[in-house]
Image 1 (cartoon, rainbow, N blue to C red):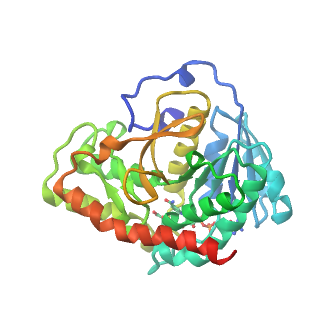
Image 2: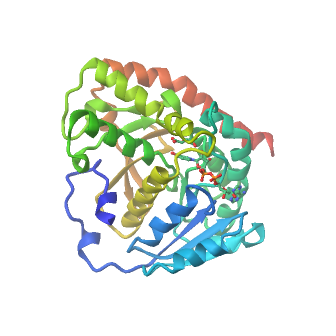
Length: 342
Ligand code: NAD
Ligand code: LMR
């Protein structure tokens, strides 16, 4: 199962050090928003990881039964439950990775940005606790709109004097998972081999798949590029409409988030060959945050990979320029939200 999480965005898929050696289950992962549609399957997948010794479930809704349910699975990680604000600090004690899927999801007719008012407050309050109780952890933000909630998280960490830009990640793995699936389907390729970097952000036109950088190398007609790009940008909406008011992506999101957790744990475990796309503080463009491929290490982002932005097609170059104003505005919205409240 875990082999399928190995990203195909880095070098060829060699069996790596951490997969060859006997694996100690030693890392602790907290999921904040663990009772939700994303949180529950994500907790299950994290509990299955051989690298995890404990999964801490936190939610304002009761997670006791969910933890008991998961603890009946005969995988080594122990699941601990923390319900309500009074238990938030304890849920963060000693954790290596904090994953935040707390917040409302889209309903039909909404955009990611429509979630801002509710979710920015949730992320801000959770981040205050993370800053106080787990300042050295890797932080994975799933709550939408990621283009704004990641800057919210950064500003809170700055105010608390514990901001390490290398350890704050907006989770855009679902876009990468979707892009490789859609390309493999369109081109009749073996799915496991396909990787497509996705850059920019995580909302509408800010999601930009670099189809020209697909591995293995594939040629696309102009029409295929347009169709695949637009399908990826609307994939969230496709699901929201399909679920008719019952939420947005949950199972595929949990799968994608679990892959990003596993990649982070492999990096923390000393694997020197871990690459993922993520929305991080970046100097690749003039924007302060930008999603691109990054190399992960024990310290977090070891490097953003600039080569993906070189040699873009005309279509990709235009799409990149077109997304910048929207992404810039979303980032600024997140930053000013925190400043207005202080
Ligand atoms: P959900 O409504 O099913 O679950 C959200 C959970 O958050 C609930 O259990 C709720 O009790 C909890 N919650 C609310 N406020 C909280 C707080 N202050 N502290 C702790 N927990 C709190 O929603 P979902 O489908 O699980 O989606 C969660 C979030 O993930 C949404 O914002 C959604 O837009 C986002 N999402 C992001 C991506 C992505 O690619 N980044 C993909 C899918 C969903
Ligand atoms: C998705 O990409 O499916 C989600 O980000 C949709 C959402 O806003 O919940």
